[in-house]
Length: 335
Ligand code: TF8
Image (cartoon, rainbow, N blue to C red; front, side, top):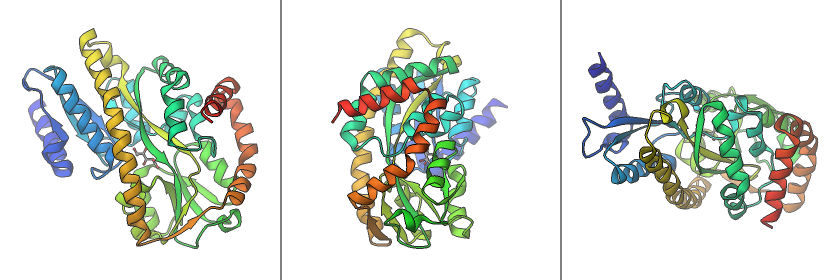
């Protein structure tokens, strides 16, 4: 029965995140429940930010309860997004990368070595380019409400310190489920293999993969530092999180409700960026105690950039030359 389902949901949320994962309306019985699916665990600032979204929303209106599910309890990024398209789930906050399987245009964020720093990322996403990319989601039955931060991605592995392209030779690396990342690591001489986030820890532990790449908070908080010895500050790509709402469910809401949700997602973005950047610093400090850290010299960084140029060219066709140009121009304008 529905009651049983509700109880199960609550038990699951309590299991993982404690009462923090459920943010109730002042009128919980009458309120509609919005479920948020996250791929990362409840230690990550993404979780805290999703809870913060729930708090902002329940301050604005009594119409909603918010339940935050973490660690792929509901689904991985791609499947959760498909559930939104079908009206089976209200909210997910995925990396943009797996979305390229739904919209090739979203691969633009996977082009490596383009966004140089946080300031540029913010400007590009908060400007017309970011708006254009959010608007595009509507045709896919998704409502894009805000850009949140995952961060710059960095490489870990268990075989050797990676300081140059040559060190990548033959390393089996897990990538996100996107062809662009596959081709990038292939061009750099590694041996990439795509998998969903939920399989990465076990893969590293059992040695079916030698390494993976993710922002520092994820490396720290998902415990990858326990199974990998070497960390390289590659900062090779900035793939954002995008706050998505199901369009079929959105269309059933009235305008005030839509506005309250949109505003809360947007307002929580500031909290999310601030927290993520704090945790990025503390995580890097933390993992350096347990991992050997290698920096990439400017010279070597340029070699990386050159090696992936053909990949960028190839994929510009599927992403759309216009989008790629707009993206490059938006980044240049920040410099
Ligand atoms: C990855 C991504 C993920 C996030 C998470 C599932 O490596 O960085 O960690 O998209 O929400 O798969």
